[in-house]
Image 1 (tube, helix red, strand yellow):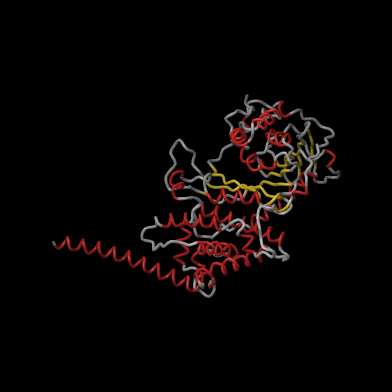
Image 2 (spheres, helix red, strand yellow):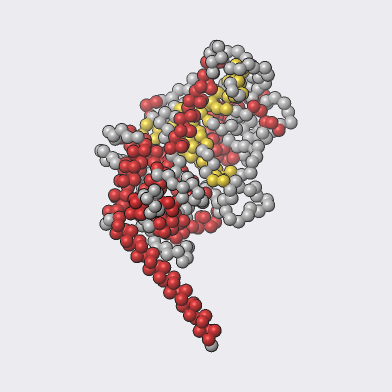
Length: 489
């Protein structure tokens, strides 16, 4: 009973809410009773793995092939672009006018709550200019946000002051949220109903069909600390931060899907619902998944195998069979079941890997690293490099709200996806750095048409801020005068 998948687990709820009854019956018949959600293996009262995983034995293992139709890979036909699209055209496939209009409404709703700050309503062109500035800030790194408006010759970057005043930019950033004001007040620090997240998840998935190999990567924790100023009730675990988990195409690096997870206090419990939720659209198509999740399990890999998806990734030692205790340096031990290969490799340190796509004959002699370990390291290392390129959520000493960090990281992912789309449909061959510079230039030029010119937009912003501040000062003077008159009486 300890290793049975109960009906109240998140995974079964996910399938029940999305699949038909026939799909659910097939899912149950394909091994749903294997260990998918349980206590951590190190704390199990019994020794060894349950029989549901199969019998681990040495000897020859030949994995079952996964047949994939490569002709469907690439850009989908769910969008239209001009013959020679600009960088901004590709970016607007994700941040389209409708979505930016919704963002503007949410920003204005939050901005109206900023009493005494000199707030006036934002416009769609202004929001595009804000996005362009945030992308440029990801390229021009400074220690604090205010340094972008510094007049110090050693720090000065004039382009930012030509687009926004410092006070206006900080007001827009302060009012920038992932959801509407009503949802934020009702749900608190949660990422489930945020419009930006839902929109980008949908656009990422529908614009690109991946190749056979997929990978799941965990980004660095985007935020550490409390997510809300109010202390958590004693009955609730203390939240420690926000983590972004992405599903991407190995061949191109295109991010297909992502999930934001509110990290709770350190716990040995784990769930596979996030993994299954990410890969659900690609089950049954012959894909291969590389996962860096240290909480992989034989039960998860058996379930993916039964749904025509291969998998490879590290597993905690408690989930693995009993290997030989005495292994020399650069030596491996291999066991297998009918569908899984378990490997213990002693390099600099012990590595435990589980795979349903590699065979036991993939192990060379003379201390050569196993092919499954080499493949896994090669597929995942490129993903880590791309994450560093797409990370905009760093302003040094300037503290940011958790939703700002999530939004900035998603903006970086969107810019990279737009870069890949541009590389596919355009004759230009640009680096990602050059693409981002051209994107900022194109978006700024198109936005300045609505302002007539950047200097006029800045002048208009200064006048409106000064007028709002004057109104606030007049109201304060009236209050002081009334108090003084009452004292005289």
